[in-house]
Amino acid sequence: MFGLDITIVAIFALAALSTAGLAYGVLFSRIEAQKKTESRVRRVQAAETDQSKAKAARDRMQEMSKRRKSVQDSLKDLEKKQQDQTKRAATSLKAKLGQAGLSISVGQFYLFSALFGLFTLVLSFLAGGDILVCLGVAFIAALGFPRWVVGFLVKRRLNKFLEEFPNSLDVMVRSIKSGLPLTDALRLIAAEGQEPVKTEFRRIVESQQVGLSVPEACARMFTSIPLQEVNFFAIVIAIQSQAGGNLSEALGNLSRVLRERRKMRAKVNALSMEAKASAAIIGALPFIVASLVYLTSPDYIMILFTDSRGHLILGLSAVWMSIGILVMRNMINFDI
Image (cartoon, rainbow, N blue to C red; front, side, top):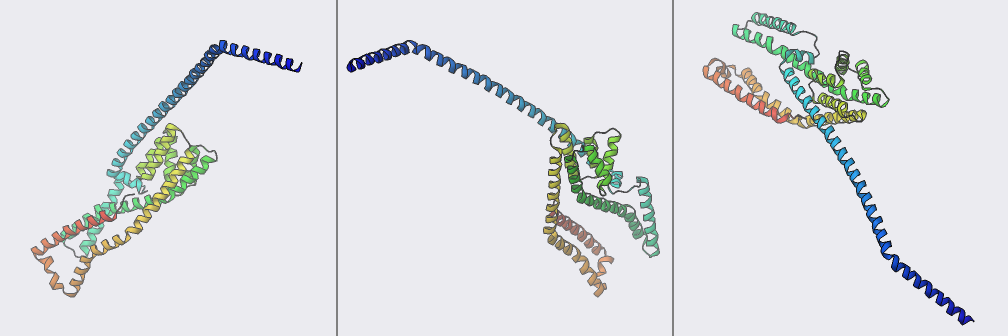
């Protein structure tokens, strides 16, 4: 009975196995076809997804290219405008007076120059000078000295602006991060800043009040403050107005760059002080030697001033000294 049961079980197992094999053989092609169909569908869906992703990526690239081109065009226009403004500022006495922070007009400047030249002419006559020497001194005093004073005032004012400008940018960064708009940050500097940054930002605010946009008003500041740092500031504002972005981060980076440029400039000046001292000593040495010779043996050196050949020697010496001074000046001055 036990053996019969095992036989029956084996028969049923073999029958089931045979049925399963027959069913698999019959349905194998259909199952494989279904698998291939599902695989093909998945590939098609993946290809459609890849195409949509590729299309989205192409759209993003095109949008970025358009924005980049727009920013580049804006920068080119701004650079061209600033170059024109620089040329006008370099040749305009009115612009120089504004850069120096003087509130006088061009006519008043020429009047003061003429009065100063007349004053030096009278002093030269009273000192017993020759007529040609007196006229030369008056000419230099009327045309050269006032312009030198204006140039000195311009340089001093620009240096003060460079010292305070990064601090003002930091104040703007904190104001923008606290939620104030850019116009309110500009008004804050115009009201609470230090001179001469305060005056320049007040001009920006006043330009906005008469209808100019913020980028245009910032670009106009380059006329009164012809510095590359101001150019950087105007470019940052122009890019932010065209392409958007985090203005506080951009201004913070600009402030850090300006401080690093100032440190680099101070380091270069410190490293070049030895060369500058050597150039000053070499340039002053002929005059010192001539003065000592005149004090000890005046007859020995006076022939240079009384003889025509001495005049020729002095003229050639002045030319060669000027060339040497210019060469040394170009060797020790660096643009940063």
